[in-house]
Amino acid sequence: IYGMYGSDGIRTRLHETLVNLNDTVPNTRIYYSKVPVHSKCYVWKHNNEIVHALVGSANFSTNGLSVPFKEVLAETTYDTFAPLNTYISKILENSIECSEGIVRSSSRAQTTGGTDENICRMILFDPKTNEVQNANGLNWGQSAVAHTNPNDANIPIRADYIRNYPQLFPPKQEFPLISTGGRSHRHNDSIEIIWDDGTTMEGLLEGNYPIKGINYPKQISSFPEKRILGEYIRRRIGVPLGHRVTKRDLDRYGRSDIEVSLLAEGIYYFDFSVNR
Image (cartoon, rainbow, N blue to C red; front, side, top):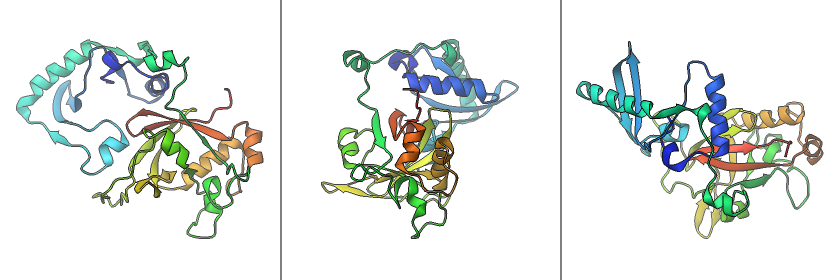
């Protein structure tokens, strides 16, 4: 249940993504609450009776559920099952299926002629040379140093992106953590990437880009393997796996940038479509 629909509405791209998931993922139903709901409840039922439940602050996202100590979820006790079930039933009674939702533009978008100041156009080539980097960016894996897969790739985060879109590229964690699952967070929070064609992947805002004494992320890569991003881009633009990507390849595809926006905390939308 998307809880804040009743007060905040929903952005077009998030709405379209949720409707697509609702239509394509088996045994999944996504609802919008018509009353504002900010609680996070995770409930398991058997024969329509609650058998286990967690409540806390963690959003239903990779970022919300996997970053150590950032959020909390606690088990509820048996005596809370009945009132919790009543609460959830009331929310469902005041919810609609996501396909019935209405997208409401923000006042900011209306006053700026429908533009969105939170969409960053990230170019996939070096503007100084007008060519895709030889050993970085989409060709990161083409370097003979520290890379074993030729399809490894990243999307460089430039200084002007950080200055103009601070909500998209926040400062790095000051104190990195190591999760119990073995992943070193090295100042890197996981993000979820949703592409315009419906493809999803986990990513990292990684590296260090110091600006005025503050470290910001230097690039976006895929996780757990950096080749996931490079293979996806190559398949999409028609470049054989393992081959170098050139500016000519991007021009032939019809686009040499990706429009990046934030759907929710830790959830990014990447638009690489050519029908603009």
